[in-house]
Length: 338
Image (cartoon, rainbow, N blue to C red; front, side, top):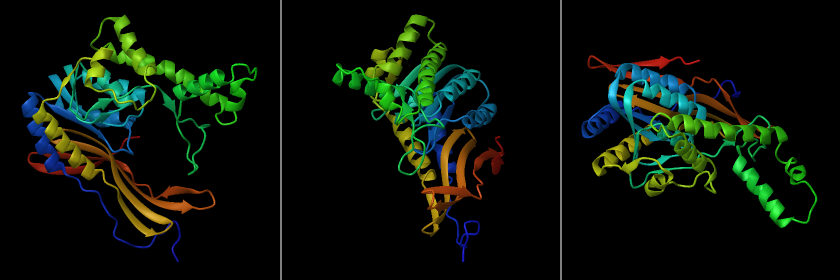
């Protein structure tokens, strides 16, 4: 009989690593744009996180300094504070930064583009609002017993709706709201909102010297839009005050091909042992430059604990992994990032 610690023996599925194919596309894009290309891609289950900066430093350390660096970004977002660190590191390796956006570039990824001198957007590209949501230790839980993110904009809209419909009531709306959202969560989100505006201003300051203009753009991205995921297309980005131009069709086509290859690498590779035991392999974040690819791969056992209604992980060997071409030969290694 199997136990959670010893799942049945079965060949573990592995996601494909398509280094040769992605390197070929990167070389073609670099030739078209006239400079080096650095790529940053997130699986929908990945995010902008702190260790990405260490991975980026690995790529840039090999790339060196260039007049212009082109950055391909595809991400649903993550940590805004990491976005500032990400851009700060890039700007130490170039005088001019150009963001290439063929698809979604949301939330914290939008914040990364704010640090670019120019944003080139394809027909299917979009940025989003950057209003803050927070996953707090005291956040409400969903049906799977996981903590959910809470947005300050959502809370403010609940309060405004309450007051518009209960204008004769003397009852404090927060009294009812506290039954669902802990007051410390609301305080933390309010502080995070101020931080978000500040981060946007800091990022824009890399290429906009007019502080009033930078503040206006930051305030718009943080408070104008009714939805955190509202798609900001090229023309709307121009109205905000961002320097955006259309992405060249040939470059856009190649970046979509690169996204297809990364999506193939990022597919779920789940090995099911039975209804409560499985092994998951999945590449979440990929960064790449000439002759070097770095990616983070989930590699762990899963066990469903029915009394808690949640999956727990065991035998976790998830790590950053590195593939480099050195003198024509491929070298694979684990990157130890604490």
